[in-house]
Length: 177
Image (cartoon, rainbow, N blue to C red; front, side, top):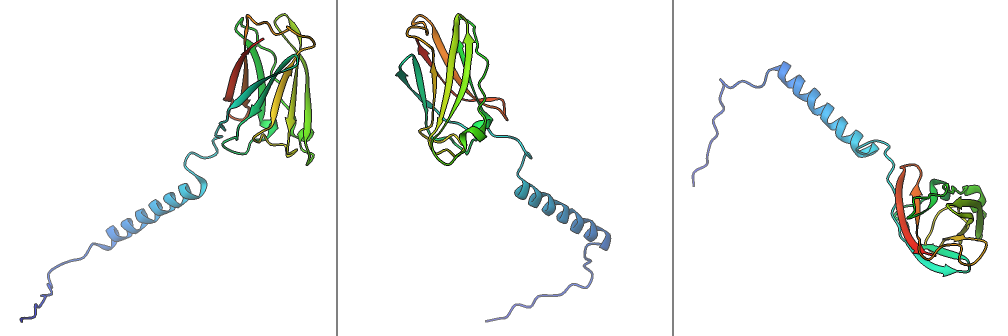
């Protein structure tokens, strides 16, 4: 068997030192940019809206909305609850304070009374079962009035849960009085 010999060419030239330096600098810049994107994330500090859903149940003089798991940790202070009706009336949003819902045990927050169209007293109450200041599965919101039949059966009401940092809707649900 014959052994192959490689001929070494003496007339071949390498890349010039200037081109080599430019290539090394370009490669270094590209690697630094890739590392920057990997460490800090592509797109910077954008706020992602969590997702969830609610389950409605009827309670005395109102409705109860129980939360399913949220897609990411969400503090109650980052959430607003908005009640509106199909007549174009919107109650002022209730925005809970985490300090009221962060006591290590079941915590409640009373959002006070707001008006919605002809209904003068709609009460929002929040129950944080873990008392950790975050919306977790099983936590719930109740919307009640002072007497029976205040929510009209001929009106569709919508409860919208908003994520304040992103100004986006997390979830919503509807009910008739």
